[in-house]
Amino acid sequence: MSTSDSVGQNDLLIVGPGVLGRIVAEKWQKENPSCKIFGQTATTDNHRELAQIGIVSSLKGSRVDQKVPYVIFCAPPYHSDDYPEHLRVAASNWNGEGSFLFTSSTAVYDCSDNGLCSEDSPCMPIGRSPQADVLLKAENVVLEAGGCVLRLVGLYKMDRGPHVFWLSKGTLDVRPDHIISLIHYEDAASLAIAIMRKRLRGHVFVGCDNQPLSRSLHTSSSSKTNFGMYSKFTNLMVSIAGKK
Ligand SMILES: NC(=O)c1ccc[n+]([C@@H]2O[C@H](COP(=O)([O-])OP(=O)(O)OC[C@H]3O[C@@H](n4cnc5c(N)ncnc54)[C@H](OP(=O)(O)O)[C@@H]3O)[C@@H](O)[C@H]2O)c1
Image (cartoon, rainbow, N blue to C red):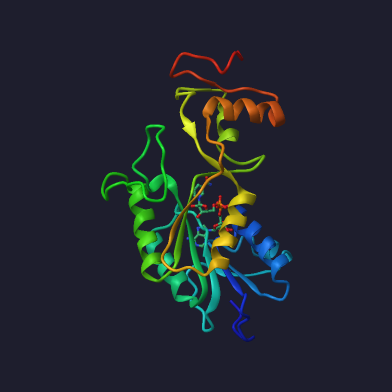
């Protein structure tokens, strides 16, 4: 990361400028045309592409001489040996002024019965789920540093998300009536920015849209609009809402 220029009050570091991070970058740039946006990635594979959209990239784990006022950590936990440590490094690159936000997941909640789940719902006890353990440990690093946590439900856009997976499989042995909450990547990015703008400390948020749908409804609506095909979920021995 370049440290030669002075730090701007809206400069932003995006750890994990993938699908969500790039949308955040685009929106942030529009709101703050004179800001600098830095990105940290797992590999150098996308650095040229990121430069073309105005993101100055470096590799993950880099510590900077000049800290920035806004840091968003939106890299997924996969392929990371020590995810909480990556959050610690991200926290060390925050100057404590604007906001430090971590996009976690609602996978930390101990809720899988189609029931209501909100910010205050109980989380998985440590030791039950390795995936939740990693996220909860990472969240603690962020909260202890004064950052905020945004627990996102499944993210989707037209060509990415669970509907794409289900439709590619055709038939799946899962319940068609299981309720799935999703949020569009664009909405998640806007929400993340709105939270950062509040400059809050130590808050936990849940990010989802207001249209929880069953698996079958998700795929029937996405197939009608985009794909021209249907998935079948076989676990309950029912086909999707009258469709074969
Ligand atoms: N997808 C979902 O349904 C879902 C649900 C809940 C929460 N979330 C969370 O939402 C956030 C955004 O998801 P997304 O789908 O936009 O992610 P994504 O597109 O898969 O993000 C990939 C980006 O992260 C970089 N990256 C991976 N590991 C890294 C690390 N340890 N340090 C720094 N950069 C790293 C990659 O670098 P390269 O360019 O080198 O590959 C790439 O730039 C993530 O925090 C994810 O955990 C996602």
